[in-house]
Length: 472
Image (cartoon, rainbow, N blue to C red; front, side):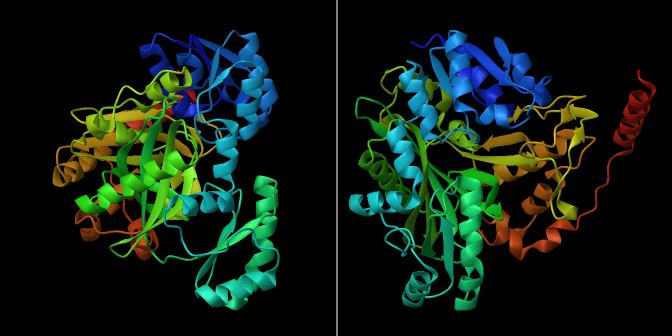
């Protein structure tokens, strides 16, 4: 078994990995920049190493991170999500240095990170894909010709893209002409490659993804699906497992597609196959994420499988502890990404000091966070500061528990998306389980809420501010 893991990440996901390691009896080593000196993952890990003053560059230096892993006696490295988590070079360097990379091998990362190559792989495996270009576009003229054939609207996408970047919707030839050079430029700046491809735009689909696990012995299973349709500008806000919008036959079919996709590329470790659902029956492969997802928590809640522990075991060469027949779903789970943003001000980031924080509790409530009272949220990273996950036996119970937990959680000193989520929960469409990727844009009124804090909470906030100012 693996003895010591270097966690090449920060924040709540680093804390999550520390916990998994501790339960397995594995030591953990954290890394941090000067901006993260007082971060929670630094406090929780068994060891922690400073990787320099630059707040971002240190987390993106693959050679330095692997050298540190080797020097500190780590025999494995977990990349978390974001940063270098889908970087094939990191996996290659780990392999050269004899360090187990807790994820798929470099070849699979590279193959699935290239969106046009991924499309070809899925087509060969019989997994349906969105109509679009067979490969990368070589000119604006080629893009205009193809768009005329498949019909507008279309999506221009960076071949190496991800995270909602390098994407433009084009509703007409004029829009395609206007956006073509922009997407090429964005792709080059964000991903180091100006390759782009074109797909038909599936208008307001449901975004459904399937969690898979695969080991080195040829076993591949799925852990059911997650509904990620509540999103803003291609960034997920709320995730639900299983989807309240699928029938049993749809659920079985999408699970089979996901397993088929993983087998087609020889996948090992945890991964996520993402689909768009158009209408009632048209599932289209969108992409495969070759890493742990932010929203893995909801899958863990409905299946009881610790996905991070399974990742570590697979990387150690051990078989999965579960067959497909062992995976049973129980109830519903929902995750809220608690972002330090102001929904009433176009979701402007709200970084600063947490004057008071307390997590919710009670049955079926889980909080994954990297904040604490007195912590300063730095302005250099993603605005997500916590994840609230709730579970209940049925959909109605889930909605009620989610509302209660959102009222219970307290994050003071910065603006957050908590009040906005409460407004979403109260809409008839969401409560009925009927929503798609156009939900947020269709409900701009939800950002125009009023925040009324109880008198005793306001008094506590004022007292905390006075104490902080006085230096108590």
